Amino acid sequence: MVLAVEWREASGSIRLIDQTVLPDREEYLDITTVDALVDAIERLAVRGAPALGAVGGLGVVLAMLQGSREGWSAERLDTEIDRVRLARPTAVNLAWGVDQVRPAVTSGVAAVLDQARRLIEEDTAANRRLARLGADWILERTGKDVVRVVTHCNTGALATTAWGTAYGIVHELHDRGRLGLVYADETRPLLQGARLTSWELTQDGIDHVVEVDGAASSTILRGLVDVAIIGADRITANGDTANKVGSVALALACARAGIPFVVAAPSSTVDLATATGEEIVIEERSSDEVLTLAGRRVAPASARAFNPAFDVTPHDLISAIVTELGVVEPAKNPHPRLLAPIAG
Ligand code: MRU
Image: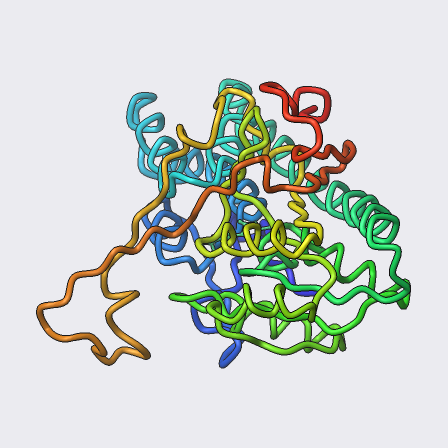
């Protein structure tokens, strides 16, 4: 299985698989500076909430090493760590990863690296466990021998430290011989579904089709799938969930069709400090991503774009939130601090 994020001890660098060029090329970036890391995060060379948590933790190590090479003051180090922390706003895991290891800065690089490695190990274990819990819940809830799935964006090993969240559940169903056809939304504008999820499904030998995002609601209403499973970038205390733009359309269609809409994430994605989805900052990205295709302008020269990278699904449309700590059913049990018992 490919690793999205790896620490290279010998060179003191973060090794990333460059997700902007997949599936055409399998290229790696060896990152040794904060500038290069922030650039990789902003360009989505590394992406997906749990993978961002890992680079948040390792980013602090990187900043400390660069700081000692270049003789930074404590203030400069703080500023550079904050640049990593704030490189993308919506996925809580990035800031969480930084915040988890930051208290160890005064104890030295080795202590911070230990903490960052612990986060990575815990994320991998969380993925494995939530995949099993999610598969159990879906099989029981649907009562199906074989479950057909629609998913959105990319939530596999590339988006995490290994295995995957929503993708992990898909993989688990496949391993149990209980998975039917998977519909992978292409995920405009950056095509994480077509480029990355389809690449992972192909490598894992999982039967799937790629569909345009606009097809997903109809796929659900026509009864072609039994469940929608997505990941999350931030889950607020009441269960509202930010994920890749287009997710809420799936949730609305699932509610109409009466099939479950499942959110899968490690507990590090749960943000109890944010009460509801209305408070989530939604990243807005460059107009070029919408107005051009494969580097060629497709809209009139004067056209402007609206390019939110995420949307928020209200908790009452979510049948289950699956973390490694358990499953809650927001649509059934609305409660302002619904997630406290499973937030770790
Ligand atoms: O903009 P991206 O590619 O970082 O968005 C990723 C998603 O929306 C994922 O669904 C989410 O981070 C969960 S990844 C396990």
